[in-house]
Image 1 (cartoon, helix red, strand yellow):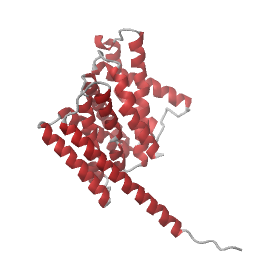
Image 2: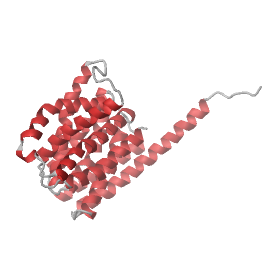
Image 3: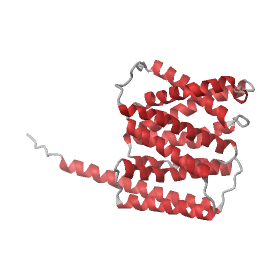
Length: 295
């Protein structure tokens, strides 16, 4: 189920979310962010009522749950940077940020969680790192927007893994923590008032397109290693890159083409090694089962 949750989240972020936000062209990133938080809180409240989750003390409170404050701030920063990139026609910058993000995930997994990679996986990460280094060298500048996206989302993934709380409850807590800031802005700021019914409908739907992928991502984070989760994320930026090139007229620079090729080579290598490891594990498990003798 971890792989299904991860793919659902990344395909949503790569295809559904950028198209949705491009339809809100003319609305400021700050206004969209405020509406995302407000309508996400409403949407998840409805889900919790339908699923009959207990809202009062849904988990025994422990010190680590205070990390949800930090994860709420991390995801708010990530959302704002993403909205700025998409809204200003820089989908390829957003794509680059999410290409870099898995490398940060791998580093955090090794440094904080003590996760280890097999030799083939280390090679895959090395290829991806070379691709990012070449792309940065060819571009001749430090892409601050892309780096901000990568660092904020990697930190969010780490924090959610450390908190280890139910995916929906955790996201609901994060939205409630951000609501005291978002709600006044959505109600009072001139740039946050919808121009018409169509725009209001699109803003309302941000609750759905925001909440569901993040709930799926948090569920995947609890079931997969941080390294696997990070390298799977190449699905989303690849989709964003293709959208920017094929549908929104952005021109890929040579550095992005090199990066795209090397990243996908790393992804194929990592995925192949993971499949082989899973087959070996199943074979070893079958070999360790005691033989049953006939009567």
